[in-house]
Image (cartoon, rainbow, N blue to C red; front, side, top):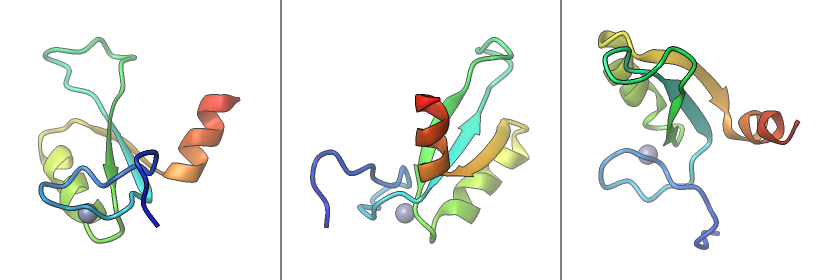
Amino acid sequence: MSDENTPICSAKGCRTAAVWVLAWNNPKIHTPERRKTWLACEEHREHLSEFLGVRGFLKDVVLLTEWESAERA
Ligand SMILES: [Zn+2]
């Protein structure tokens, strides 16, 4: 169930469909409103959140479906 439109997890080497969006911001290079996003499958959500969290970059973790409906709104 993957085609080229299916968002894939951002974890290295992972080809699983993403379920979560991790919104983050690096204050050294981004303005405060800017949001970079990583995608994560269930398995990698915790790992990627921790990676961003320890650096103080993580702003939000939301379900991909919610993120997409928020973007359309
Ligand atoms: Zn993954």
